[in-house]
Image 1 (cartoon, rainbow, N blue to C red):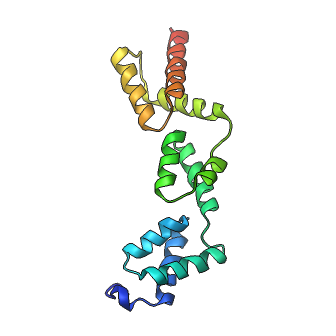
Image 2: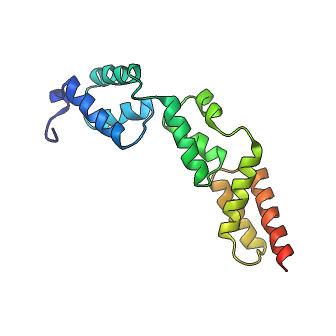
Image 3: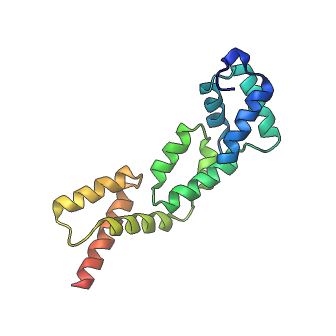
Length: 160
């Protein structure tokens, strides 16, 4: 199948490729569609195959979103980064909001945990600015980053 051109791929072959992708990990509907199109599948056949896979519940944006959010929260990424990544994968905003943790304390704890892992020793102004920028790049808000920095500053004062 590797040497076939797009016009040579049948619906069954496109389905086989899609199922192989899905055995490795979850995909969102649009992400799977794009992956198949990059592989050289015909657009009409791809839409048919992906629709059939959705009907069979083999592809689900909701399931993908929940899995993705759990994974990124575990890796201490912030809500802004997670939302952006999911939007770029074609996931609807209402699914993103539904899957993100509703408790704002989760994000403050994640930011503080990540910042405390990155900070060894006392933070001067430049070190604090560097950690702050890193927290923003990881998708935390200004408020979450400041609370995290204040939290690790207090821990350092408590140890002294």
